[in-house]
Image 1: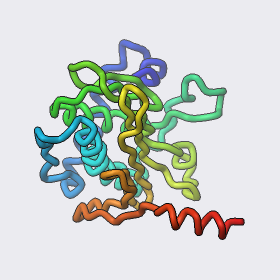
Image 2: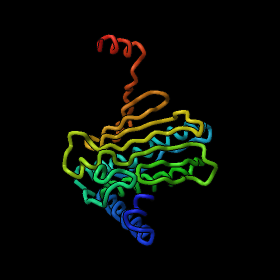
Image 3: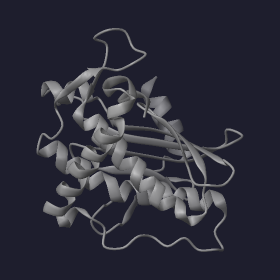
Image 4: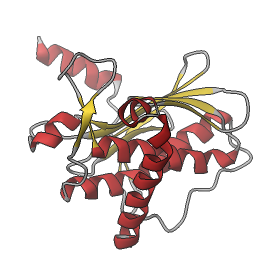
Length: 220
């Protein structure tokens, strides 16, 4: 929680984390329809890479409806200071950044009970999930485009974005949610798909090599 340490100081960090968790818990309590009734089960027959694919999908199914609802209700627009490591005024750390970062962190820690261990490189924090040897790297921006969201500019929607790699740099999975529309796209079984958060149906969005060639020729 590097950003939170810098913003509040170490003594207040745990208090602020508890406050944010309370905000999330209260929001979920008031909006029970946003919570998933069941979680995906990880089969012992799955490879570690398949588990990571499912973990990313499950994480987005659990977090996307909550963050999309918060965006619609204009939650977390308060300015908490400049993002550390950026030029003054270039990027702002706001309430929804802290909420989204904590939400993703807590959900990942619960999902890691399935025997996975990985390092998480988040925009505002770096942390390990799981108790074993690190086998995977997750890069995540829990709330991209927060500046425009704070200012009420919605030309470019805020997004939840994640990519997963093994320790050798091989890409495993990726996902993206438009937090205005709630549209969720992800890699699944080596395909790009749109996932309906309601009935969890998948629509294949993978572009074939033939389609790529047609699009390229059209562009010329």
